[in-house]
Length: 105
Image (cartoon, rainbow, N blue to C red; front, side, top):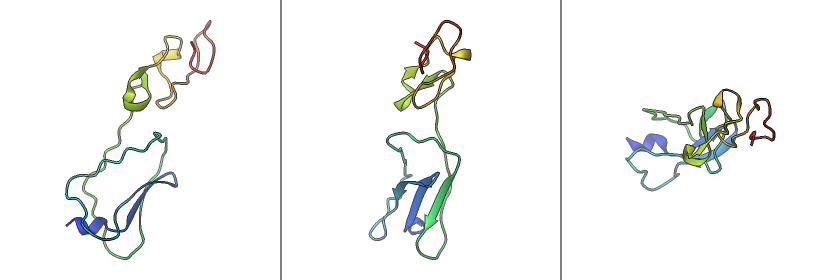
């Protein structure tokens, strides 16, 4: 029953990323929530403003491989990054010797 998600707000580290409708029909299809801009966080919280059950069947978190970053993981980390790894949002990394800047270019 999709009504279990009514009045639910989704937070990532206290930043609201989605609010389910408080009235009307709630879609039966799975809801994909894509924060824009992307968020980095450790805590995902579902908060309900009314009493009742919350229906959550599956939670999937997606991120980039260690050598990719940006929206849709379309960017490749600089060759100057140690271990070819960088921040999944901005591409910042620790530089190998001879490389400089936040993205080691």
